[in-house]
Figure (cartoon, rainbow, N blue to C red):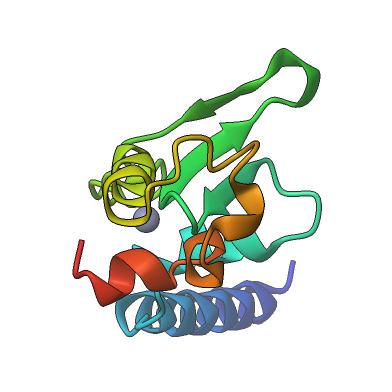
Length: 122
Ligand SMILES: [Zn+2]
C-alpha cells in the first residue's frame, strides 16, 4: 500500500526509457541502429554481418542461414550485398577465376575485409 514507491519506480523507469531512447537516437555507429549493433556484438548472437560481402543475415545453425534485406528492429533497408561485385572485380581486375579455391592465395588482403568495397565507394 505504498503509492509513493510506485511513483518512484515509474519515474525511475521513465528516466531509463528516456536515456535509452536518447542513446538510440544519438546512435552514430556503423550499423543502422543501436539494437542491431548490440545484436551483432552479442556473444552467441544469431544475427551476423559479413563485412567482406556486406551481408546481414540470421544464422539458424544446422538449419542454415538466411540473408535479411531490412533491419528487424528499426525497419531500415540494409545495404545491398556486394558478393557479386567481389567475384566480378577479382575476376576482371585481378584475373582470379577461383578466388575461393585455386586462386585464394592471390586474393589481395583487403578483399577479406570491408576495405575493398569502401575504397571503391560501392
Ligand atoms: Zn536497425
